[in-house]
Image (cartoon, rainbow over all chains, first blue to last red; front, side):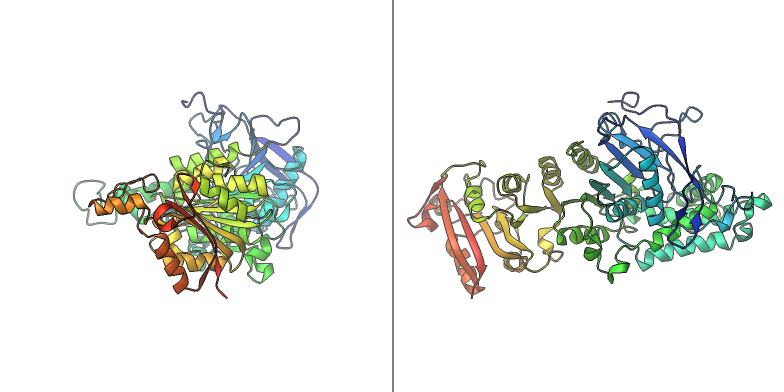
Length: 376
Length: 198
């Protein structure tokens, strides 16, 4: 199949407004909020074929296809979602949603605070994976989806799939947890803290109220993203992709770009700082750090998972050191302990954490087979 | 003996598994034994394999499968969690045989293993003629075989005796038929039900 025949094609985001206050894990209450989302495929009469795709740190609701005004901007998981693709939109009704606190249209720091009429900025409460999932459940209610055939996500998205299984065991039949973890390690939190410090110490941050000053903490955001990119790639892949190749002939003996890797990181950092909101970045990294469903069970993940009912597919990638296979195995053995259905694939891949967004044949074949086996 | 699964050692194994048991199938291949045990006995089954094609086949077969390197041990599984831990025609592919057996009996109440009997008459004749055996039960050339351990039923039983492993039941086959007389010479496949001695 070629691109033209297996794409969901042109799509348009939709907006749902919720008036019922949402009590957040951190104690704050959002009086009202909006969620921006996209859908692909058709909800069947039994409303049994809905799949929620949860995004990670930098993602959003635009999972597949393209928008009329940006025909080249394919959704971030377009290689997975579409007619004839592993998550087949001829069978499933797929929903992508921008999470609370996001910067792509859902209520977040860039939205106006109804109390002041100005952007929330740093006053937007820190939200958690639990809060995101609670908000997603409101959207499910709105769409008439009592139970998801599946909730899927990679990385931080996988944590949301897990949280669905924990919080709403009757509303999710399958959880696909890809390149994720039941909690971050100290090393992982450390990376997030460096990223946050880069933003928080940027002179243009202005305590999070940079909107009023007509600036953005682009330097901080850029550094945060550069650091992130280093950790999403494997050492091997960086060596293969860039090695010590020079941007131009001969060393510069200056602090301009010498090596291709420097050029790549600068480009990625600049691009990201051009469209992503720094406050959203801060919130999202905190949500990552805080997620730890075993915390209330004395660190016993298996005990936390006892209330889940969903069947799981867990996937990790051999060179992913940010969300290492070992972390995925913790989830797997916690599920086995409870006698729950789980399959686990540890995919051989050179691409590190980024692997979950690529289309390795073993990976996508496993995903395709798993989705084919889901009864709707 | 009927051959419901196309692999006669499965018949024996299936008879030893009671409805509703927890079963771990090591080197589970495409998951057909687990599929059968799930459908016929309602077991809670998990397969373990390290070949991505087998992982895919198991997912297609609708059985639980966990991709792990069996050589690295079963450390993720808890003591005594499973009623039966099965290793069907895979023990000869594992390098750390003793540790494998110990691990099977750590996580399972009983272990079930089947393996090709290197002592079969045809194999002895091949060796006597100066060549490594190639047969239905050992279908590989020496240079492309996934098997890393070559042992007879007598060897295996000696190992069990030395490690405090009780042989609770034994079946031996050749050409799909049960072998009673001198199985170490006449059987090409052996199936054992094992427990901890004492």
